[in-house]
Length: 404
Image (cartoon, rainbow, N blue to C red; front, side, top):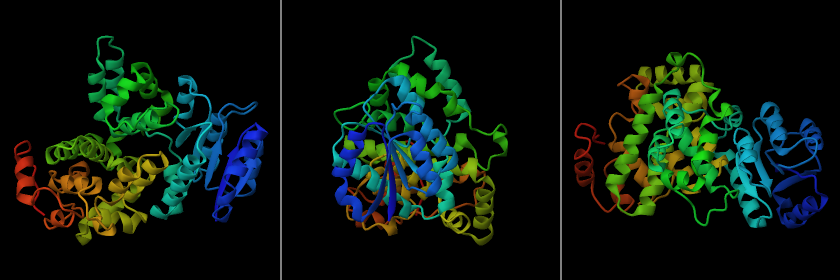
């Protein structure tokens, strides 16, 4: 049974949660704490899968509580349920909260958010990897991207579209900006799926606060050259896959979702390269020695591939299930029953067409990845065949078309 901890200093709020979520008692064991200190006492007695806390509380607010939970119980998924949406408070929560929900909220919305979070634990079965993911709020962007964003945001003549282009070039900043704008704190009338829309809605000041926050940028190791992969090559690969998506489909909504999945599909590598560098190097060696696809070697060494790790991170950040599914299975489409040319299909095909997959990031051309076969397009009822797909991509990337 999954264990959920709710924290709020207002007794009537906790009573309301008890009443509204009563029917979930068959699946969840729920505890209710009236303060941050009471919550810590409960956590010290027994682990919880999810904590849902208010932000504004006396003595210890939600951000402070979640900082403690992050440090001591990183496997616990952290959700803020708050009636306040000041930018300053939101920025304090960015490094420590996985999701933001405004109150009063529909009980079904809260049930869905918690249910999706606990369901994700089945996707990433390794408790060790869940702890690795849980220790991170946002990952920092690549230092080169950070420098460009900082310079651009200090330039008063810089436009929204210019900032959006820089944001889209970095996986982590893209993920955090879109997570933040689509959280219920900002009450957008419909889901925002493009970076330019997000930057325009949040405004440059909010994006600046997010990007230049010291908490977001303090965690890259000093010796970047010692990391097992090249961040620049990985970002370039993600951008190429996103561009190929745009070449394959003209439906704006379908293209936007798949391009977002493309920009984020290797986010797991950023986390693993920082927290599991030696294991990642061991996976590279295993892949080369035994001629294994890299994603399979990762599963043997780590218990999961970068795809599952990245999907788990995006899932607890509250990204739509279509994005999470696409990131999780873009190397393993056989695990999902598919009949539609959806986000997963688009990402998988675009990835298969991209030049050299992720192996350039590891500086090793011998690495391969599990990819789709040409017949896959028929199974998902794609509106084109493999030869047409290659022709579209070749017009833009003459040397970057793969042949499954």
